[in-house]
Image (cartoon, rainbow, N blue to C red):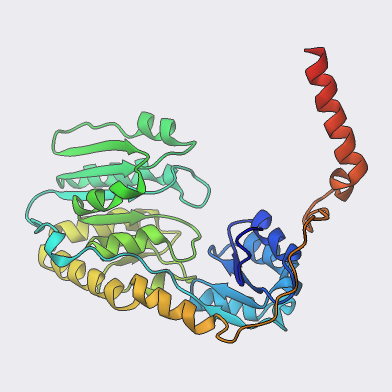
Length: 321
């Protein structure tokens, strides 16, 4: 590697963690877990021998990692996310007397995000008679299904789809909404949640014990049991009917993120765990001997003979075209 880092963080899948196996001795290796999913813990456990630190985004996830025998000899840390804070002067003054503006911002898929609950939630909101606009921002396999099953039936109860939002445009979207909805059945500590609360949106989110209660409580949002599908609509209707409470929760949501989940707070956390003393790092190799991934079901597929046969097959295929 030209960069030759002194510390490396692996996250988001086994491919990233494979890099830990090839680093020269002396490079500080961190394995990062972001989702409270058994498959994530199991995958990370395979690479414990190549970690100097296992980091999780919430205290609850850190405790789970510490309880795993694979990490018995690896120190653990909680390194929560931090998000940029929009200055107070740039936030619009929200009019909490007008129809509620709801937002879902994320992947449009049933796995984890449970977006196929949205038509049921939408029907309950419509039945209540409350006026609202629900914006659904993001892309995913279930977008077409959602568009077919979420139809505007009243001019005072509307739904729209934004599609994918470039990161540079996320802040502008957040400023136009009042309530952030997240009905997932597992999460770590969602960045979208922190960004929404940092902009003063009131979260109506699943009561997941992994990381969400670290930022959401009764003072700044609504926690809904995962099994209580009707509870998401009840919470939104309650906020519609209690506008003073909505305004108070919005202020408290922004204050919570500003205090504990800013970029500055995240930076302080990382600086506290990175080594402060220079260590001797072995020379970086000029050539790499690639081995089969630890999680590969068929290691032979990655062996030199198999790689040679794959290259030969591609060359023959190109020749016969």
